[in-house]
Length: 212
Image 1: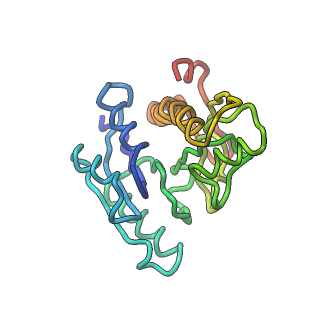
Image 2 (image 1 turned 60 degrees about the vertical axis):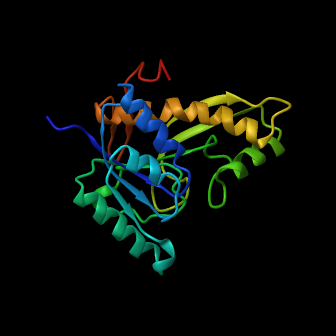
């Protein structure tokens, strides 16, 4: 039986991609990396793809005039590489999900959706907003991607404490530690059928996140 095939979409540093490759190499993520897609020809994360011998598809978002055009190119590349699941890892471009990829695109957001999310809420902006609002908890959320930023149904969340002396940088580091455990656990769960997603529901087997 062939392995479950994923594409990872990036726009910048590729820290999520690096973590997923590390989990794969440690035997904790049993998937095949079929493709890395970058919206930025200069994305530092492409180095991780090249070092791991993962095929890449790079486009310059400035060349395209509409989201539809970009989305068509991205999903055409995923089809060509027979991708089972599209994994967004710091991908900062909005996509229009094409019919055959509905419920097959996931993203991780560095906050607890439905708060502190949406257009413009990424990276440091999220953590600053959490601290400014006086929250004592933050975390990360894995969700299905639809045609809006950070809007699709939540698959799983992992919480972390917000400390009184936190800065956006210290909170970001703590949230990223949670992301590094939650995201591969979700991907593995989808790959082995312990997380089942259809048009009406998301079913998660008990105990799947016990080690996350």
